[in-house]
Length: 364
Ligand code: ADP
Ligand code: MG
Picture 1 (cartoon, rainbow, N blue to C red):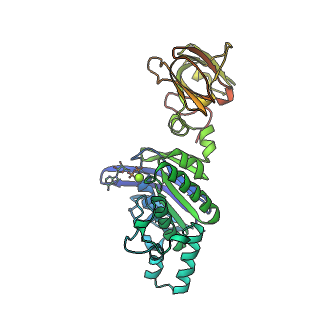
Picture 2: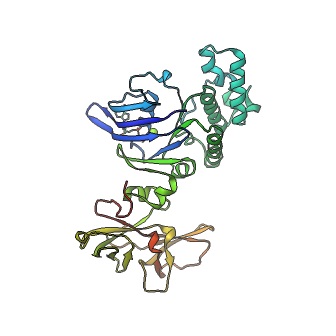
Picture 3: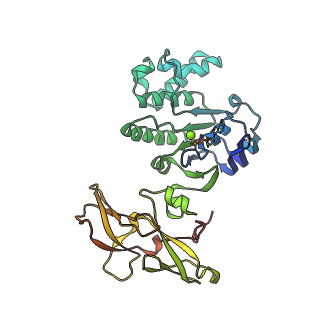
């Protein structure tokens, strides 16, 4: 049981501010994922929660108790790192028991905790092996087991899967998802730069960028209702297409005339003063569908066709100043390079952003 509250938390190394104005409440039983590009401050934020990094401004509390000056060992937290950091000369059993032995817990209590964790992580057959006789995925499970044995209030994971190859990453990710179910009641904070991990594991995702929070919400909410172009492009793959346009008419509906020639009417209210403003229309690659009709939001020449079987990716020739649009069609399509295709999208799937990148539709 643990509720984490961060209020205006910041971090500076000397004059260099790496995190600012972090406000976040994490409730008991949640698995919250911090996601964002490399260097945005994910690990630093996690390490401040763990007590491994000093908080230079703001307040952090667990269950209402201010933690800023509480040493790591007294926070009730266990952390799993990207590098498993197992003791190479100790068996799996001893690695997992180490923390409890140091804490001088009785032997039967230690045994029970280790057996329990081993069962949960399907490590029972490996308890007497040394780490070198395990695969990367198994080693990471031992590192997780070591955290479980300590029975912490809060689990922190910093990119635990990034040293694993693709297949193992998927398998271990599913194990972590199952672990989350079995450990209902404990609070988990998980750092990754992998959006699939974030989407599949999180009860809520925190999107970080440049030391600040861009948006917080359940995975599909971020996908469907990104509050800004950063989140719109960070969540979803390939990234959302953005087209330049100008507001032609505003009111209950917003009419946008696109630089690429099309005109779209969005069921999005905008103010009279928005008329004439430059905007960006956002459409996800998977929301574009070929059309013969007049209502195209995109007309483009196919430059590259990537047939992946389950989907076909079309890369279209870019307009000046825009990135090359991408269309993701389900299944197999035999489309020739150079073909000119018109695409439309349901109006409910369209996104509209102002010049600064803020959504007209969804606000933080
Ligand atoms: P992430 O985990 O999101 O990749 P980090 O939290 O590791 O990012 O780093 C955030 C920023 O803080 C980076 O710009 C990094 O260079 C900077 N940083 C991290 N540790 C230190 C340090 N000890 N001194 C100065 N800058 C640091
Ligand atoms: Mg990191």
